[in-house]
Image 1 (cartoon, helix red, strand yellow):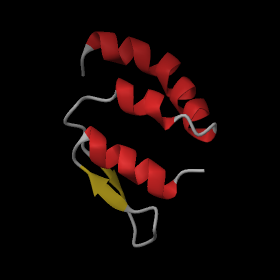
Image 2 (tube, one colour):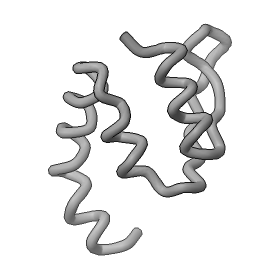
Image 3 (cartoon, one colour):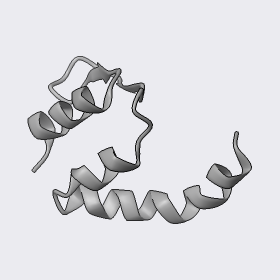
Image 4 (cartoon, one colour):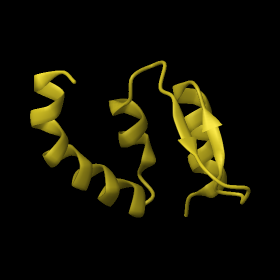
Length: 65
């Protein structure tokens, strides 16, 4: 893991969770790598896989507040 990322993650993670809980998921998407791979396990409406930022944005719109 990149040392810069490892050092920044403890500060970024709480910020990202607060942003998502406030419905500001654009901040999280902006911080993601363009070719993000995010998998949400299960067979519920919250589950799915996102391979790009746009897919991740659509997932947040579908499942977010």
